[in-house]
Every structure is written in structure tokens, then in C-alpha cells.
Length: 382
Image (tube, helix red, strand yellow):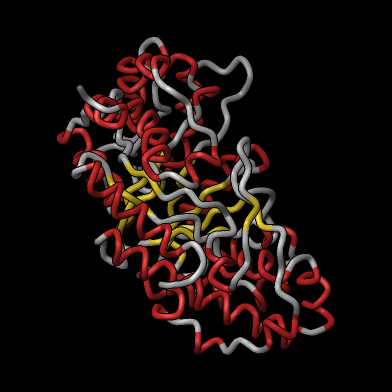
């Protein structure tokens, strides 16, 4: 008799041809080349079989890789059963405070929400840490890194190439610095900028070393990899810049841009995510050669046409969604999304990830939705 995990793994039956086509399309976007169609990674469908099984809360998953794998598998199964260009990958999901744990900080673990870090290091302890001490050998035995490696090895063994594993939540140099030091970060930018630069050198090295260590455990190249539905090429990591949205353009130039550049460089570049409003630094971010793509956590805060035009002008790509307007037909929605591309005659510059609330038709007729997405590209772009 099959165990719960064995049964759920049997339900994961990806279509290798579809996965490969999606990987090629996404790879073209990363390289700045023309895919045959703009890649689309639609929302997963519901998996009816899930109702027969236990649901494990966040705390149970945190302490048990088998339970974490089972809960991730339901989404992977839902994605494997639909058409589109989505890749299949999961991670050891250990919270946003994952990297700070290498400095001895501990997260609170909850049943109903993801882990959260409330501890911080004081200035004296941070000043006692030398940036050059933060190496691969330093991080590999500290904090949650050994747990992440254990979980990665377990996931790889069980998945047997049906899906990939991606990095735990590494955030980015400035977000890690904020987590490590707390809100005093914002005043010390002005009161003690030399200290903040010291802190950012430490967190940049931690970001790089933890990413390298986990990539070795996964068995992927530094300049490529996976992240949820995304295939990465010509850049192998994600950098989170949520705290950065609270900073001025001048502060971005001094305290953020150099460290993003240093963090992404060992991986051939990468993509940047941030929630909130980042209008004040978006163009500076897009001007950085190491930044290959952008993802907004709050795309509703941006004017679609001018923002997408700016991204395309810088020869970068956007990964994510932009919301559908009320009363907007599906065809008009797709035409609006495709407008910046049709004006330039290009299909490169986006990996489109519509949300289910913007695509209710997806639940009933996914094939027709994709047929419209492709046919409009043929008509509008050629």
C-alpha cells in the first residue's frame, strides 16, 4: 500500500515536451532574444484529490520535510495539469529571516503564518563581525542552512527529476540588513553611515555565500536555475528589495545599488522583486547591468504602459502580472498587455504570470484562453 507521500508523488505527471518548450521560451527572454511567443505562466488548477488528505500547517511543515513536500506538491500537480510555460519547482520554505539565522538570530515559528524574525543584533556585535569572515565555510554549518540542505536533498531524492528545487528565501543585502539590525537601520543611514556600509558588506557576503552553498546542494550552475514557475538563464538568483521602497533616490544610489550589483555579479546577474512603490529608483535599477528582470509585488501601483515601455527601453524583462480592469474583456486585457510589444514588433521582454482573479475564464476553458493569447500575438506583433 502506498504511503501518503508516495500517492501524492504519483499524481505529479508533468508533460516533458510542454515543460521544455516553456523553458526555451523563458530562456530566450533572459537572453534578450525572440521567443516564438511571449511566455505565459497561468495560475494552477485545483486538485480534487487533495480533499482526501491531511493539510499540514506552517509549523508542521517547518519541522518535517515530508509534510512540506506534500503541501508543495499540490500546487505542482495543479500546474502540471495545465497548458502554458510554467516550470515546476519548490523550495525549503524556511522564512524571510533565513539568511539572518547564520548570525545566530532565531525566527518565531507559527502554525498559521510563515516564520518571522523579531530578534536583532546590536551595533557592537555587528561591528565585531568582519565582512571577509562571511564565507561559504562560515555559513554552511550555521543557522538554518544545514536544515535547508537536508530538506533540499530529501526533495531531490523524492522528486526524481519530476520537478526542480530552488533557493530558500535569501531576500537581498538591504532587506537582510534591516532584518539583522532592526528599524535603527533607517536613522543610522544618517547618523552613522560608515556603520551601515559595514553592515551591508556583511549581509552582501552572507547573501552570496548562502546562495552559493544552496546552489551546490541543488546541483545547479551559478548563473541559471529555477524559482517557482520561472526558469532563469544568464542570471541565477532573485534579489528582494522590499525595504528599499522606503528610501529616497539619493539613498538608493549610495546604500542599495552598489550592494545589489555586488550580490548579483557572482551569479551572472538576476532579477529583482519588491513590494510597495519603487518609482523613485526604478530607472536606476533598470540601468544596472546585473539586473536582468523586475517583478512587482504590487503591480496595481504602476501605470502599465509607461512602466512596461521603460522596462523595454532598457532591454530588460518583466516577470509577473498586471491587473485586469473592471469590465475589461479578456481580449481587450490581452491587447492592452501586448500593446508595448506590438509597437516595437518584439516578443521579448516579458514572462507573463496572470493571477486567477484576472483570468476567471482559465477555470473553464484554459485552452481557449491560451489560443487567444497566441493568436493575438500573431495578429498584433506578426
